[in-house]
Length: 127
Image (cartoon, rainbow, N blue to C red; front, top):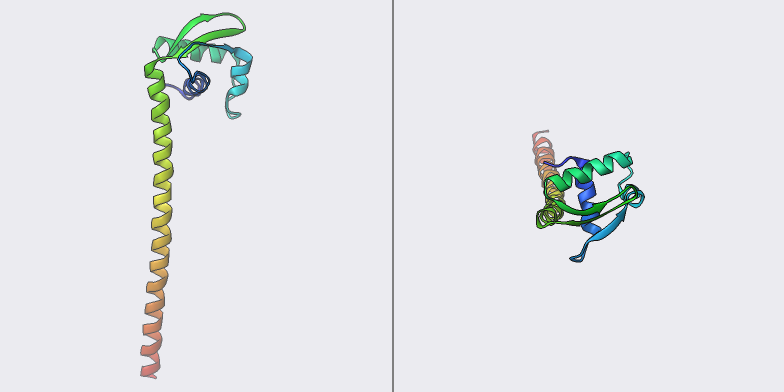
């Protein structure tokens, strides 16, 4: 299982490597590409890159002090595509829950109105 930082780096690499070739990444550019909630440092980016490479999610052709050249593997692309599918499924599930809750609120309102009307007529008849 990948940690959040490694997963974010994999998403950055997958997003940039849309073709089938290697891409050269500047460490500074990669650090700026991370979402703001991540407090990334150069060391953590390199550690995540090594983690992805060791687990065969990316192939690193070369790496120096300022940049690296990498390409995602089929395994890395699969993780990226599965994350997109999970996000789509999550949004669809949220929409279903919204529809169900709106329908339940509507039916509950109708049910409450019917009960109030029946009680009103019953109490008027009893008085």
